[in-house]
Length: 67
Image (cartoon, rainbow, N blue to C red; front, side, top):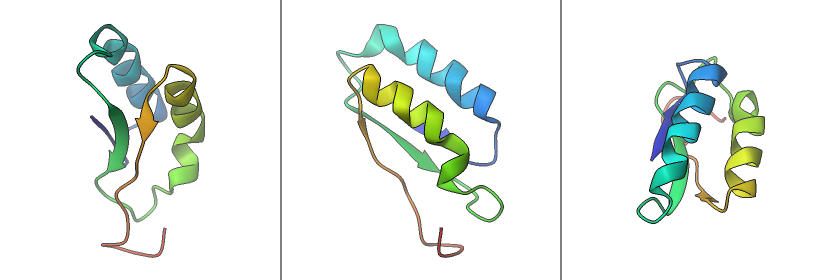
């Protein structure tokens, strides 16, 4: 499951919370979509919460820039 970089952090938290009841099916959460202007640091707290909930984490990067 992925959070979209070009949406808000609040949107990512809402998506994460909705995933809690599907932990048996979702192994990891990721980050994708528009990189420019949306650095991974924007979602740091979302990923910290995901890790606390037992999800593995990944981030899609490199298509639009160095972040």
